[in-house]
Image: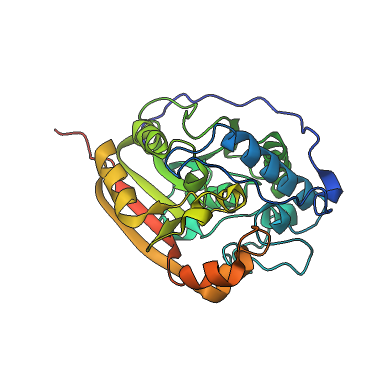
Amino acid sequence: MSSTTLPTAAPTESTSCCGPDCCSPEAVAAPVTITATAATPAPDVHQIVRDRYGAAATRADQGQVSSCCGASGCGDDAWDPITSDLYHASQVQGIPAAAVLASLGCGNPPALASLGEGETVLDLGSGGGIDVLLSAQRVGPNGHVFGLDMTDQMLTLARKNAEAAGVKNVTFLKGQIEQIPLPDNSVDVIISNCVINLAVDKPQVIREAFRVLKPGGRFAVSDVVVRGEVPADVRKSMELWVGCIAGALEEKEFVRLLDAAGFVSPSIEPTRVYKAEDARAFLKDAGLDTERVADSLDGAFCSAFVRAIKPPTKA
Protein backbone atom coordinates (compact mmCIF):
# COMPACT_ATOMS: atom_id res chain seq x y z
CA MET A 1 0.00 0.00 0.00
CA SER A 2 1.38 3.38 -0.98
CA SER A 3 1.94 5.81 1.86
CA THR A 4 0.31 9.23 2.09
CA THR A 5 1.23 12.07 4.42
CA LEU A 6 -1.90 13.03 6.33
CA PRO A 7 -2.51 15.83 8.83
CA THR A 8 -2.43 15.24 12.56
CA ALA A 9 -5.08 16.92 14.68
CA ALA A 10 -4.11 18.95 17.71
CA PRO A 11 -5.97 18.13 20.93
CA THR A 12 -9.02 20.22 21.65
CA GLU A 13 -10.32 21.11 25.06
CA SER A 14 -13.87 20.26 26.02
CA THR A 15 -16.24 23.18 26.29
CA SER A 16 -19.19 23.43 28.60
CA CYS A 17 -22.52 22.17 27.33
CA CYS A 18 -25.62 21.17 29.21
CA GLY A 19 -23.75 18.92 31.64
CA PRO A 20 -25.54 16.52 33.98
CA ASP A 21 -28.75 18.53 33.82
CA CYS A 22 -29.33 18.00 30.10
CA CYS A 23 -32.47 16.05 30.91
CA SER A 24 -33.95 18.82 33.04
CA PRO A 25 -37.24 20.33 31.83
CA GLU A 26 -35.35 23.46 30.78
CA ALA A 27 -32.87 21.47 28.68
CA VAL A 28 -35.42 19.18 27.07
CA ALA A 29 -37.38 22.04 25.62
CA ALA A 30 -40.17 21.90 23.11
CA PRO A 31 -38.82 21.00 19.66
CA VAL A 32 -37.80 23.80 17.36
CA THR A 33 -39.61 23.82 14.03
CA ILE A 34 -38.33 25.21 10.77
CA THR A 35 -40.06 26.36 7.61
CA ALA A 36 -37.37 25.19 5.21
CA THR A 37 -37.59 21.82 3.47
CA ALA A 38 -35.32 18.85 4.21
CA ALA A 39 -33.23 19.77 1.18
CA THR A 40 -32.72 23.36 2.37
CA PRO A 41 -32.62 23.38 6.18
CA ALA A 42 -32.24 26.50 8.27
CA PRO A 43 -28.64 27.75 8.65
CA ASP A 44 -28.50 26.90 12.37
CA VAL A 45 -28.60 23.12 11.84
CA HIS A 46 -24.86 22.76 12.49
CA GLN A 47 -25.04 24.58 15.80
CA ILE A 48 -28.12 22.72 17.01
CA VAL A 49 -26.57 19.36 16.13
CA ARG A 50 -23.28 20.40 17.75
CA ASP A 51 -25.03 21.44 20.96
CA ARG A 52 -27.12 18.32 21.30
CA TYR A 53 -24.29 15.89 20.52
CA GLY A 54 -21.99 17.83 22.80
CA ALA A 55 -24.52 17.16 25.54
CA ALA A 56 -24.49 13.47 24.63
CA ALA A 57 -20.70 13.38 25.01
CA THR A 58 -20.93 15.04 28.43
CA ARG A 59 -23.44 12.46 29.64
CA ALA A 60 -21.47 9.52 28.25
CA ASP A 61 -18.31 10.76 29.96
CA GLN A 62 -20.26 10.73 33.22
CA GLY A 63 -21.41 7.16 32.63
CA GLN A 64 -24.96 8.06 31.66
CA VAL A 65 -26.98 7.08 28.61
CA SER A 66 -26.94 9.69 25.90
CA SER A 67 -30.41 9.23 24.43
CA CYS A 68 -31.66 12.55 25.82
CA CYS A 69 -29.81 14.31 23.03
CA GLY A 70 -31.94 12.64 20.40
CA ALA A 71 -35.71 12.62 20.28
CA SER A 72 -36.24 9.47 22.31
CA GLY A 73 -36.44 10.84 25.83
CA CYS A 74 -34.29 10.89 28.94
CA GLY A 75 -33.15 8.67 31.72
CA ASP A 76 -31.32 5.39 32.11
CA ASP A 77 -34.46 3.48 31.10
CA ALA A 78 -34.87 5.38 27.83
CA TRP A 79 -34.98 3.08 24.82
CA ASP A 80 -34.24 4.30 21.32
CA PRO A 81 -35.35 2.06 18.42
CA ILE A 82 -32.62 3.49 16.21
CA THR A 83 -29.53 3.37 18.45
CA SER A 84 -30.27 0.27 20.56
CA ASP A 85 -28.72 -3.19 20.18
CA LEU A 86 -26.23 -2.37 17.42
CA TYR A 87 -23.11 -4.06 18.84
CA HIS A 88 -22.77 -7.57 20.19
CA ALA A 89 -21.24 -7.76 23.67
CA SER A 90 -18.28 -9.75 22.37
CA GLN A 91 -17.52 -7.06 19.79
CA VAL A 92 -17.14 -4.25 22.33
CA GLN A 93 -14.94 -6.13 24.81
CA GLY A 94 -11.98 -3.87 25.54
CA ILE A 95 -13.83 -0.78 24.26
CA PRO A 96 -14.23 1.90 26.98
CA ALA A 97 -17.76 2.13 28.35
CA ALA A 98 -17.95 5.84 27.51
CA ALA A 99 -17.41 5.06 23.83
CA VAL A 100 -20.35 2.65 23.89
CA LEU A 101 -22.55 5.08 25.82
CA ALA A 102 -21.76 7.85 23.32
CA SER A 103 -22.79 5.74 20.34
CA LEU A 104 -25.76 7.37 18.62
CA GLY A 105 -25.57 5.45 15.36
CA CYS A 106 -28.11 3.33 13.50
CA GLY A 107 -25.86 0.48 12.38
CA ASN A 108 -22.53 -1.27 12.74
CA PRO A 109 -20.37 -0.19 9.78
CA PRO A 110 -17.08 -1.73 11.01
CA ALA A 111 -18.75 -5.15 10.97
CA LEU A 112 -20.25 -4.64 7.49
CA ALA A 113 -17.49 -2.81 5.63
CA SER A 114 -15.09 -5.76 5.17
CA LEU A 115 -12.10 -3.76 6.37
CA GLY A 116 -8.71 -5.25 5.56
CA GLU A 117 -5.29 -5.31 7.18
CA GLY A 118 -3.28 -2.18 6.46
CA GLU A 119 -6.15 -0.08 5.09
CA THR A 120 -6.72 3.60 5.83
CA VAL A 121 -10.25 4.34 7.02
CA LEU A 122 -12.16 7.58 7.59
CA ASP A 123 -15.19 7.72 9.89
CA LEU A 124 -17.44 10.70 9.11
CA GLY A 125 -19.00 12.03 12.32
CA SER A 126 -16.97 9.77 14.60
CA GLY A 127 -18.57 10.88 17.89
CA GLY A 128 -17.16 9.14 20.96
CA GLY A 129 -14.99 6.95 18.76
CA ILE A 130 -16.58 3.50 19.00
CA ASP A 131 -16.47 2.79 15.25
CA VAL A 132 -12.96 4.23 14.97
CA LEU A 133 -11.71 1.91 17.72
CA LEU A 134 -13.47 -1.12 16.23
CA SER A 135 -12.10 -0.30 12.77
CA ALA A 136 -8.59 0.11 14.19
CA GLN A 137 -8.74 -3.49 15.40
CA ARG A 138 -9.67 -4.67 11.91
CA VAL A 139 -7.02 -2.75 9.95
CA GLY A 140 -4.27 -3.71 12.40
CA PRO A 141 -1.07 -1.85 13.33
CA ASN A 142 -0.17 -1.25 9.68
CA GLY A 143 -3.48 0.48 9.03
CA HIS A 144 -4.83 3.78 10.26
CA VAL A 145 -8.28 5.16 11.10
CA PHE A 146 -9.28 8.83 11.04
CA GLY A 147 -12.32 10.08 12.92
CA LEU A 148 -13.83 13.40 11.83
CA ASP A 149 -16.22 15.30 14.09
CA MET A 150 -17.23 18.95 14.57
CA THR A 151 -18.10 18.70 18.28
CA ASP A 152 -15.36 19.54 20.76
CA GLN A 153 -16.85 17.40 23.55
CA MET A 154 -17.04 14.36 21.29
CA LEU A 155 -13.46 14.83 20.09
CA THR A 156 -12.19 15.14 23.65
CA LEU A 157 -14.13 12.04 24.68
CA ALA A 158 -12.94 10.07 21.63
CA ARG A 159 -9.27 10.85 22.31
CA LYS A 160 -9.77 9.89 25.95
CA ASN A 161 -11.37 6.60 24.87
CA ALA A 162 -8.55 5.81 22.44
CA GLU A 163 -5.98 6.42 25.16
CA ALA A 164 -7.89 4.25 27.64
CA ALA A 165 -8.08 1.45 25.06
CA GLY A 166 -4.37 1.75 24.26
CA VAL A 167 -5.13 2.24 20.55
CA LYS A 168 -2.36 4.04 18.68
CA ASN A 169 -3.33 3.80 15.01
CA VAL A 170 -6.08 6.44 15.15
CA THR A 171 -6.30 10.21 14.65
CA PHE A 172 -9.28 12.40 15.46
CA LEU A 173 -9.78 15.51 13.32
CA LYS A 174 -12.02 18.49 13.92
CA GLY A 175 -14.14 19.60 11.00
CA GLN A 176 -17.40 19.31 9.14
CA ILE A 177 -18.14 16.40 6.86
CA GLU A 178 -18.99 18.85 4.07
CA GLN A 179 -15.31 19.92 4.07
CA ILE A 180 -13.14 16.93 4.92
CA PRO A 181 -9.66 18.04 6.10
CA LEU A 182 -7.77 15.31 4.22
CA PRO A 183 -6.01 15.25 0.84
CA ASP A 184 -7.42 13.86 -2.39
CA ASN A 185 -7.10 10.09 -2.90
CA SER A 186 -5.94 9.45 0.67
CA VAL A 187 -8.22 6.80 2.22
CA ASP A 188 -9.27 3.29 1.27
CA VAL A 189 -12.65 3.18 2.99
CA ILE A 190 -15.15 5.74 4.26
CA ILE A 191 -17.55 4.68 6.98
CA SER A 192 -20.19 6.67 8.84
CA ASN A 193 -22.93 5.84 11.33
CA CYS A 194 -26.19 7.78 11.04
CA VAL A 195 -24.49 11.13 10.35
CA ILE A 196 -25.02 11.98 6.66
CA ASN A 197 -28.73 12.46 7.35
CA LEU A 198 -27.73 15.31 9.71
CA ALA A 199 -25.68 17.14 7.07
CA VAL A 200 -26.78 20.52 5.78
CA ASP A 201 -25.47 19.83 2.24
CA LYS A 202 -25.68 16.11 1.54
CA PRO A 203 -24.54 16.28 -2.12
CA GLN A 204 -21.38 18.09 -0.94
CA VAL A 205 -20.71 15.39 1.68
CA ILE A 206 -20.88 12.70 -0.98
CA ARG A 207 -18.67 14.70 -3.37
CA GLU A 208 -16.12 15.14 -0.58
CA ALA A 209 -16.21 11.43 0.18
CA PHE A 210 -15.49 10.71 -3.48
CA ARG A 211 -12.62 13.20 -3.48
CA VAL A 212 -10.72 11.76 -0.53
CA LEU A 213 -11.20 8.11 -1.48
CA LYS A 214 -8.42 6.44 -3.43
CA PRO A 215 -9.32 5.01 -6.85
CA GLY A 216 -11.09 1.74 -6.10
CA GLY A 217 -11.91 2.99 -2.60
CA ARG A 218 -15.14 2.01 -0.86
CA PHE A 219 -18.01 4.08 0.51
CA ALA A 220 -19.62 1.95 3.25
CA VAL A 221 -21.95 3.82 5.60
CA SER A 222 -24.89 3.10 7.87
CA ASP A 223 -27.68 5.65 7.74
CA VAL A 224 -31.41 6.14 8.06
CA VAL A 225 -33.17 6.29 4.69
CA VAL A 226 -36.74 7.00 3.65
CA ARG A 227 -38.83 4.25 2.07
CA GLY A 228 -42.16 6.04 1.83
CA GLU A 229 -44.04 9.32 2.10
CA VAL A 230 -42.99 11.53 5.02
CA PRO A 231 -45.51 14.00 6.52
CA ALA A 232 -44.54 17.66 6.15
CA ASP A 233 -44.65 18.29 9.90
CA VAL A 234 -42.06 15.55 10.45
CA ARG A 235 -39.78 17.08 7.83
CA LYS A 236 -40.11 20.45 9.56
CA SER A 237 -39.26 19.24 13.07
CA MET A 238 -35.73 20.19 14.14
CA GLU A 239 -36.02 17.76 17.06
CA LEU A 240 -36.45 14.89 14.62
CA TRP A 241 -33.67 16.29 12.41
CA VAL A 242 -31.28 15.98 15.33
CA GLY A 243 -32.75 12.54 16.00
CA CYS A 244 -31.75 11.25 12.54
CA ILE A 245 -35.24 11.14 11.03
CA ALA A 246 -36.32 14.38 9.37
CA GLY A 247 -33.12 14.80 7.35
CA ALA A 248 -33.01 11.25 5.99
CA LEU A 249 -32.62 10.82 2.23
CA GLU A 250 -35.07 8.81 0.16
CA GLU A 251 -33.50 5.60 -1.16
CA LYS A 252 -33.55 6.54 -4.85
CA GLU A 253 -32.27 10.05 -4.07
CA PHE A 254 -29.31 8.59 -2.13
CA VAL A 255 -28.42 6.41 -5.11
CA ARG A 256 -28.82 9.37 -7.48
CA LEU A 257 -26.41 11.49 -5.41
CA LEU A 258 -23.84 8.69 -5.38
CA ASP A 259 -24.13 8.34 -9.16
CA ALA A 260 -23.83 12.11 -9.64
CA ALA A 261 -20.64 12.24 -7.57
CA GLY A 262 -19.02 9.58 -9.77
CA PHE A 263 -19.47 6.44 -7.67
CA VAL A 264 -20.30 3.11 -9.29
CA SER A 265 -22.23 0.06 -8.06
CA PRO A 266 -24.31 1.93 -5.45
CA SER A 267 -26.54 -0.26 -3.31
CA ILE A 268 -28.77 0.12 -0.26
CA GLU A 269 -29.30 -2.85 2.06
CA PRO A 270 -31.96 -2.35 4.76
CA THR A 271 -30.79 -3.58 8.17
CA ARG A 272 -33.75 -2.52 10.35
CA VAL A 273 -37.19 -1.34 9.21
CA TYR A 274 -39.01 0.92 11.67
CA LYS A 275 -42.65 0.14 12.39
CA ALA A 276 -45.35 2.29 13.96
CA GLU A 277 -44.38 1.19 17.48
CA ASP A 278 -40.80 2.32 16.84
CA ALA A 279 -42.08 5.66 15.57
CA ARG A 280 -43.98 6.16 18.82
CA ALA A 281 -40.69 5.83 20.72
CA PHE A 282 -38.72 8.37 18.72
CA LEU A 283 -41.67 10.77 18.52
CA LYS A 284 -41.96 10.93 22.30
CA ASP A 285 -40.56 14.46 22.70
CA ALA A 286 -41.10 15.78 19.18
CA GLY A 287 -44.18 17.89 19.91
CA LEU A 288 -46.31 16.16 17.27
CA ASP A 289 -49.56 14.19 17.31
CA THR A 290 -47.79 10.93 18.15
CA GLU A 291 -50.53 8.45 17.26
CA ARG A 292 -51.42 10.05 13.95
CA VAL A 293 -47.83 10.54 12.81
CA ALA A 294 -46.64 7.13 14.06
CA ASP A 295 -49.27 5.32 12.02
CA SER A 296 -48.29 7.31 8.93
CA LEU A 297 -44.62 6.37 9.42
CA ASP A 298 -45.15 2.60 9.65
CA GLY A 299 -42.39 1.18 7.42
CA ALA A 300 -41.48 4.60 6.01
CA PHE A 301 -37.95 4.67 7.48
CA CYS A 302 -35.22 2.08 7.80
CA SER A 303 -31.63 1.84 8.87
CA ALA A 304 -29.59 0.73 5.90
CA PHE A 305 -26.06 -0.08 4.83
CA VAL A 306 -25.16 2.06 1.83
CA ARG A 307 -22.30 0.94 -0.41
CA ALA A 308 -20.59 2.39 -3.47
CA ILE A 309 -17.15 2.28 -5.14
CA LYS A 310 -14.92 4.99 -6.55
CA PRO A 311 -13.87 3.71 -9.98
CA PRO A 312 -10.30 2.43 -10.24
CA THR A 313 -7.84 4.46 -12.27
CA LYS A 314 -7.83 3.29 -15.86
CA ALA A 315 -4.60 1.64 -17.00
